[in-house]
Image (cartoon, rainbow, N blue to C red; front, side, top):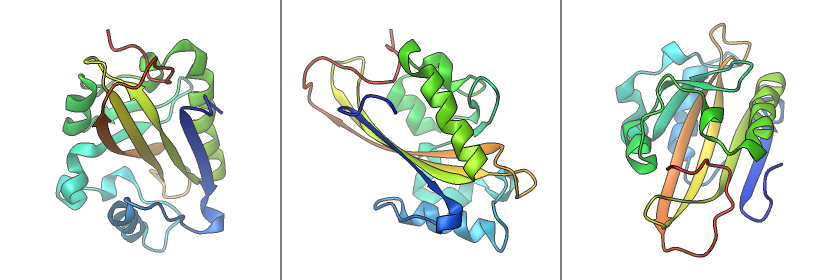
Length: 172
């Protein structure tokens, strides 16, 4: 799935237990606490102050046939990527080659009730590399069906390293 030289994707079903992802421990702990004894937490379970230092790095989306549509796009993510995508579809900002794979990724997360992880590099407007690691946590309005997602983005900017071939659409 996606360009294996630049991007890595994993899907980990919850029936295997909640996976560990180094660097995301505090947000996974919060997600687990909000689950309680239920299969999934709902979007309503999360308040801004719950997110702590992650607040500006979290996006919430709803699943649609066109892929996720952001209901809230974190302020730090908007600053980092140069635009606020609240109300927009993720796939409208993905290069054509990868749109169907991204839609399939989110369909699989819903079908399997799974945690997703995406990591890779993309290029920014100022020709610097952006190393992106995203944890995608399923949410369910009824606590049973994954119809929403929490996207937690951890990113770092680095020096230009060559020609980009990432899945994020050209920001121009």
